[in-house]
Length: 512
Image (cartoon, rainbow, N blue to C red):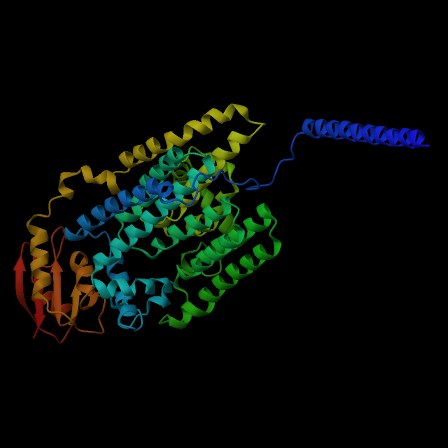
């Protein structure tokens, strides 16, 4: 019996061993079949980024150094223009008054646009209040220029580090970050002095970063503050929500972001801005084709009839080798392009001023995504080499654009940038002649510096209030006034002004 039992036991072991062998064979066969099946294509941003950084300080140093380099360059460019009185517009004076108002815990009143004019009745930019602490430390228009340089430099580090993570190389990341920092959109914005979009640039860079790294909730949270930058940014927030739905299948999160973006834009344009506006309206409806009641076909057709629009699109996409077209991230740029190209104001159409700065982080992060997609593409193997070469080439393209558009850091090669000359000295002396905390009406050059310490008005822009001082710069003013006391009396009938300073075409007059 024992032998029989042993025989049965042996047979049982043999059967178990055979079953295990069969199971193993089937498992190996299944693995072979599975390995033969090509992996399913994952939707947009479905693959995790190649994490280069491990959170150590050493990994962040190249990107931090790049940010500091551009911070120094942007500050140098902006401050050189500021101290030689090269203001291209009255905008720096306007934003100086707004920040000064917030810093004094009051309304952001823009006397330059008119007595008692509230900045929130022009554009919805309450985010400017964040600059109040900086104003307490240094109450000067130059503070705004340094703040903008810091915000732009922050975005450089974000783009550089994100590119390193996605492309798997710190060197590639630094190359993309350098190209972005040199991009003509940022350079134009620095050249145009401070604007509220300075806050949108790093926010959009972080939103794009979180989307590429598949951090959906973080992307949504970083998108929300955009509605405090400018009223149209709510449309960009809505587009971020649409991307979460289309590319990440985050239905609830995306829908909330879409509704919030559209809703806040309607609230600001329809209620908040008119509430603070002197005429209780949103002034920029009239800029659309067809006036305040444009037809849909006008909004969709009119922009494509303008040659300048096509040129600007070429500049925007050309700087990234058109590879941004491979990324759904490019959709974030559509709301901004839509309102700009639909406007009746031709200034919005071209590559000038600051209007393209918010598009630069979107374009370069879309470039990073496009390069990564082409490297992994099985359908377009011929474009892999082009995608790889576009990373170092982007820096050369950005530098070439600066030569073609001699602004920003490219303009530092002009010797006139570094010299201030006797006219700047005369303007400084004129500003010193005007005491602080008075009502002063000034021409373009000294306006921002006077706005930092006085109640400043645009020359000839306010008929209701007679200023205590006039600061008039007639240099380069064709047909400018020669009898300046008479000019002051003509601007403000019933008042008499006496010259208290005159040097190199700059005159200061005091009201008797």
